[in-house]
Image (cartoon, rainbow, N blue to C red):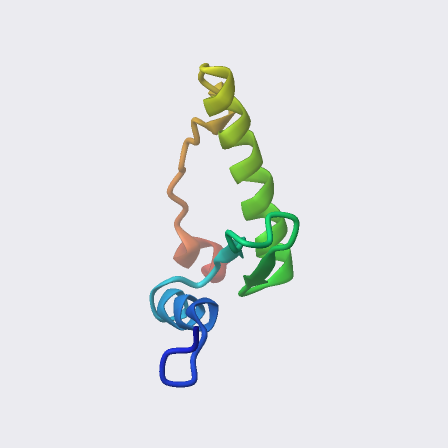
Length: 84
């Protein structure tokens, strides 16, 4: 299934790597339901992404909402911190 010497997983990895700093890709072939391939950009980021994805998927399957997923972003002024 190689296209020009590149597997679909390698192709997806190269595309995501161009646009995203952190990513996790998990794939499973139809003819091998017990096997999977996984690749990621950074092991620590992958751990966090997988934990958040697991929370999201669990909430989705249970049909509810997860208030822990409501993030509040606070702006910080890094220039002031550097000046001190």
